[in-house]
Image 1 (cartoon, rainbow, N blue to C red):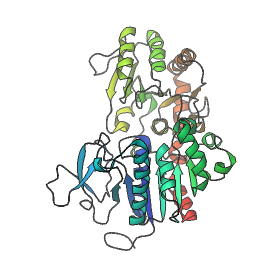
Image 2 (image 1 turned 90 degrees about the horizontal axis):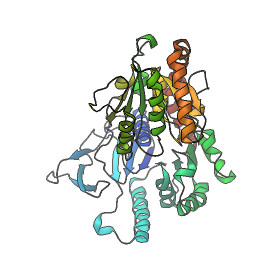
Image 3 (image 1 turned 45 degrees about the horizontal axis):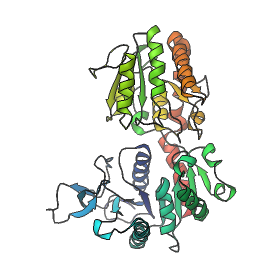
Image 4 (image 1 turned 135 degrees about the horizontal axis):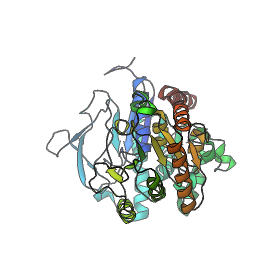
Length: 417
């Protein structure tokens, strides 16, 4: 029996840095809502309270404006600004929340802080008594395993990006190799990611791909012939996402097809650099309202499905990816998709080259930009090919349906608890 005040199934704790709006955070929030909906007790353990978090319909907590509320609990934001929450002010018996950041008075030097964070996590697990701990991302995974040593609680860690990137530092890589064999399970998103690990860890690996977000599954599909001549890219503006090769490719394509425009959704540290590149090429949309033959920077936005549903082409230019949410979602909306064939194989798991999209081999930035240009040219010149690829892309709606992927997670967890 479930619901407010009624007996629930086993207890799953989910550990991540924050619920800030990112791909891994969204997957964890979706899993929290799913397991709660089928009767599990769920607690989200985060280090910080971010300023821009995903909202969970069944959240058992409420963010407060100040400390005057009698139920206010002091927590920290990522920049260590003091924030306040009411941990029982949301849905009664809803998804729980605990915070594990060291408060300023608890902090010492770097080594002391690491050990104190481990101890704080251990104290958290002893207090909330989960039947299973799920951790996402890098250092969090190492800390989750170490903090649960001796507690007889199975820990499942999830590697969300390319393992060689997620565990790039010498110390973190050594900790991963030492501790991961002691995990109950290691979730990866692609077979390529699993192949990174040695035999001791590989035996613990389980491939669980991302699901298509419900927002995209339920969205109307715009007929290809009614789409706008718009190319879109969705993602953080940074060196790994490598949007400059798309901008360079577009600068060539627009000379032949001036009625197309490029729209970039997302923000990040390379935005100024990318805008300067567009300005130097004479293709920056200075108005920000959209213009043929120009590149428009939209920043971070909500309801991305509504914004890209009428576009014709989606391009992903990453150097590395796990299972890219943005690519799955664009395919689910019937966009004609182009992606770099980057490690650890997420795009290649999604795209059969030439059938439901186009894969760009990993080469120099110059070569990749030219290959993207030729791929854009191919789509723009031949609507028949584009229409067929876009129609085939829609098959991800079934293969990566949330019900299918969530059921895979449920069966996996029940084997471990």
